[in-house]
Image (cartoon, rainbow, N blue to C red; front, top):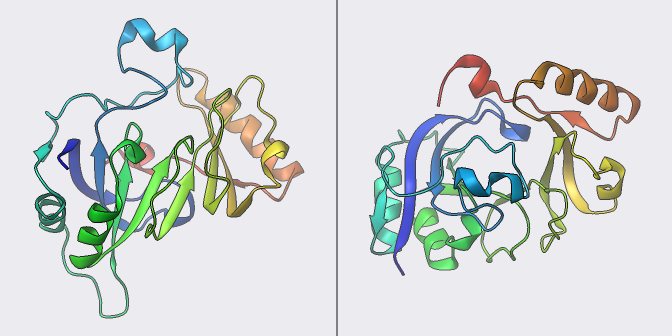
Length: 212
């Protein structure tokens, strides 16, 4: 299977439970909730999305003919980790589960990576992923109802965070929606977390620091 990748880069994880941890990010092309075109944005499940996930023209991006080729490219961007920890590979998008499969997960493992995925949760996850982060979108059903981290963009019309607490996740995060109202959204998320301590606040540290 060939893999279409927008970009691959090495940075710090800026969100959720792994905030601050060095990681290689592999951004796969394409999404099942938005075509990526400006014309379709109002009809998408996440019209606030600010990520360019279309095409293969980003840094280190391209079409990789097989899993080993992609894993080797990702591995070259990260220094070796210590003896007690594996390096972290974050599969993101768009929607990475349109392409991430068991052979690619195995290839990442073989090059010394722990594999995390950031997904909208609408597609089943293949076996072997080490860390599953689901970011639900209003109106989109969930195929993944258990994992390590549920990270809810907040606030979303028609979404009540309490509706997700019966799912089997280790961590529950509210992440303020980006855009011109980010300050107001952050205040709302802080207030909600204070009143509902099952939830923790997730800020996009990489944007605050101005890093990829």
